[in-house]
Length: 397
Image 1 (cartoon, rainbow, N blue to C red):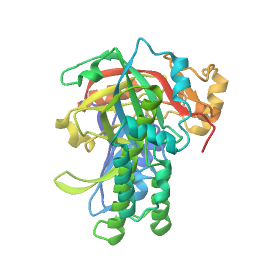
Image 2 (image 1 turned 45 degrees about the horizontal axis):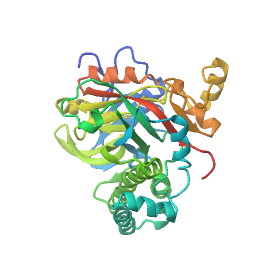
Image 3 (image 1 turned 135 degrees about the horizontal axis):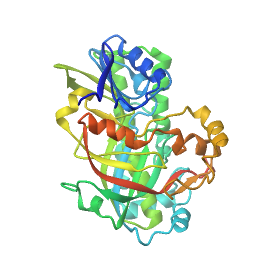
């Protein structure tokens, strides 16, 4: 691990190469959060950046109590990866752009029927989700948001294999350079927001004693929001598959905004992941910005304790959202709003969001990956290149 994991306070460490820049405000948020009652340890990932009171790109381990406000509003946000049968050689950006249409609005009846025709399990998934929300005392109105991406850093992206680094154990469909892949990054939408709002209204930013009724009620809602987020990503992918006339298989689906019961430091407690990908399963995708590659990695379990079983969840912001437009207009870096630096098509008809999500606003993903690999946390398996990124048509919601 060398110098790739370093202490910044008694209970706080960061995973970063000595040359990786981490914003001072983010480190201060990490240290402050590590000092909350019951908190045992905090680990900042190489994509660490400041958030609203708490840093994004970090994992926190507490004993005896947990902090819903630390998980935030987008409970269950995560990334799924699908292999498809759509040939790389035959794709045309204009055609993909036209066929993918507008994904901003909810799934209406006709589209729901088409999805059910292509994916027979769709109705069962929605029925299960409705039952889960009901059992947690949550309003069924949130189901209307299932299958929508949302704003911020969420996206759906068609990618192609750029380089196979180590194909041992990799599913054949993901290793196939002749077929496109589909990546979806989204979460629990308005449901997660309402859960956090209700919690903060009742308890502020105080943690909950793990044996309290309030804790049990929150965990039931948290589980429902995670189920919503997973179903949401699945439905987004299904919508895209139906519109593009392709078949696809989900290969990876991992949440990076959660609180879970785990064991570290010879203690049972709560791991809060705030923009931190769990080292779960055989494969994890760490997306780059729209101007950079994404990396499929195999987590190395033997080093999991050092990072609270967590990895970066992306490139990490370099600039605050409010600063992006001024910086980019002044520099002239963003000349074609619909084209990525690697030649990809970008569908984003919200000009402010185009600036906020520009590749230049994020750290280079290769520096994040170098830190994770240097710390012995991952082995890079493959690299994927963006082909078309969907953010919003700017016409709905």
